Every structure is written in structure tokens, then in C-alpha cells.
Amino acid sequence: MDDKTFQKLKSLRSRIDQIDIELVKLLQERLKLAVEIGRTKAQAKKEPLDLVREKEVIEHILKNNQDIFPPAGLKVIFSEIISACRNAQRPANVAYLGPETTFTHMAAARFFGHAPNFLPFSSITEVFEEVERNRVDYGVVPVENSVEGTVALTLDGLYDFNVKVCGEVYLPISHYLMNQSGRIDKIKRILSHPHALAQCRIWLQRNLPAVPTEEVVSTAQAAKWAALDSDIAAIASPLAARTYNLQIVARRIEDYEGNTTRFLVLGHNCPRSSGNDKTSLLLSLEDKPGSLFRLLEPLANRGINLTKIQSRPVKNEPWRYLFYVDVVGHIDDPVVNEGIKAIEKGCTFLRWLGSYPKGEMANGIYDPPQTEKIK
Picture 1 (tube, one colour):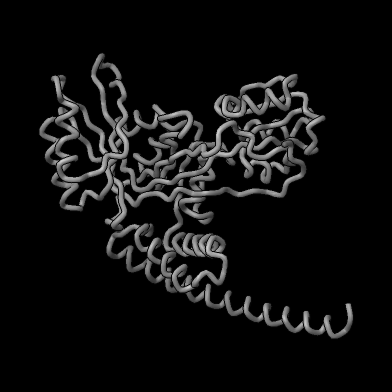
Picture 2: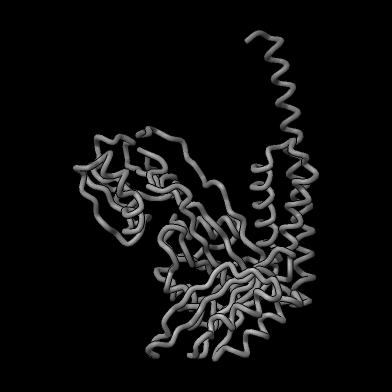
């Protein structure tokens, strides 16, 4: 490198250093303002989490950016800034279906950012219990998968526990094969959760037909074993590879593209209307001919879009069923409120589970550097 080029780089890097210092000072100022907002909210007994306001902030930033800075990166940056400022107002504890590095853990971090204190629990029921008893601020649990279907234990928890659904998050589920070396010829056993193994069956039969598979309680547990034994490979999340210092053998080995899981955020207070919301209900119908039609008719007549209806048997009450229902709109919207009141007349039981902004259908997940890829 000649002296002229060196001096030019030095000057440009010096300017970047100055900008970085200016950015830090501005972030410090933003944090102070956020803390003051937190005090004001506390006096008014309002929660630090305001999904509608946070969405407005992100949209305002992206609009003013005019696509100059990469929008996806800018969104991630400001999501983490908002997360840190929110947590400075009042540190939050978030329970999730663990252990660490599971897809539920990734979904929780996607929704809340990385600032809160994330607490893993071994069952969905435990997450519900922690939220109901106010031992945590929020909980995150899976409710349905585009391949595997509905998570029955989550529907049971919505009936058994006094909590509210205050948010949702969608996470693309992509399975990675990983071990200590990153070499496929070193693999003697493959460990993972039963669902992950099932979703990668064709790939495994095509690429590693002679290698035995073994079921474990979670993808994270599989990664832990792989970190201890060089003969073992795990099918797990990319976050697990980073956490347990494993090398990627093959990426995205799931048999079907578009595999996505929807997660619910549990709490006690629902956000205000954002203009693009969803309302969840739990109800039971009269055992009469046409009862389901009479449920749907008032919604259809008012132009309310029904996005999900799932039946679930009631425990200890043979042949009685609960219906989990999602409709577009917020309970504070007059049309939605009227529709719910209309269907309540034909229900033996109806519970409003919550209204919340629709989750975004995410298009990607963290993708660590790749060592080797099997095509």
C-alpha cells in the first residue's frame, strides 16, 4: 500500500471513529430520555412495553432512511436500541420454553430484543404458571407450526391459566447439522428432538443413510452432546452452533421449505389498537345442530375475517370441545366488539384471550459462517 492510499484510509477511519463517538453520545442521551419516560409511565401505572409505539418508531426510522442504509440491518439495530432503553425503564424477566438456544429462545429474543433477562423452563405449563403468578413479566410459548400443526399443551394452558395473549411472533424454522469438526465423514451418530429428526428424514436418508439417529429432549440438548463427543452430530438451531462452538456441516436440511412456527407472548395487559391487530378467543358451543354456523355467521355478516379455528377436547368432560379462534381486528374496534357480543349468545363459555398487533412473517434467521455444505 502506497503512502497516499494509507493516508486516505487513515483519514476516513478517523472520521468513522468520530462518528462512532457521536453515535454513543446520542444513544446515551436517548437512554436518559427513555428512563424519564419510564418514570412517567410508572407514575401512571403503565407497562414499559408499548408495542404500538415501538412499531411507530421503527416505521419512522425506515421511512426517513429512504433505503440508504440497508433497511433490514437498520431495523435490527434500532430494535436492539429500543430493547435496551425499554429494559432501562424497568428490567423485564421473560420465561420461555427452554433450554437455551431452542427456537422458542430465538423467538423470545426476536420479539423482545436481547436486553431482558430470559429464563428457560422445561415445560409449557411451567411458563404459564410463572406468568400467572407474576413471577415473570412475560412468557413465550409455541402455539402452532406450519408442518406439525397446533401445540395442544399451549391451547390447554390458555384455558387453565389466567393470562392474556399480548403479542405473537413468527419464526422460520431451519435445521442445521453440526459437529465439532464440520466434517460429515466424522459423524457416527445424529441426535435431535423427535420433530427435528422427522422434518429432516428425507435429507438424512439421502446423505447419511447408514448413520443412526437418536431422539433427545431438545435440539439444544443434542448440541450439548455434540460439543462433548466428536462422534456425535446434532440437528439444531444456528444459535446452538454459535453457543456451543460447533461447526456447521450442512445448512437448512429440513425436507420442506417455509417451515414456520408461531409463538404467543403471554402477559397480563394487552396493547392498544395498532390498526393491524388480531384478537384471540376461547369458547365452547351449545351441543345443537348448526351451532358452529351460528358462531361464524355474525362474524361473516360484519366482514370480520376468521384466521384460525381449532377444536380441543375439554379434560374430564367427555365429548365437550373448546374452540380456539383468531379474528382480524382489536377488541376495541366497534365492529369486532359487536361481533364478539353477537356470538357470545350462542356460547356456553367464551373468554377473550387478548388483542395484539399482528406478528410479521419473518424471512430469515441468524446464519453463522459455514464450514462445509452438503448439496
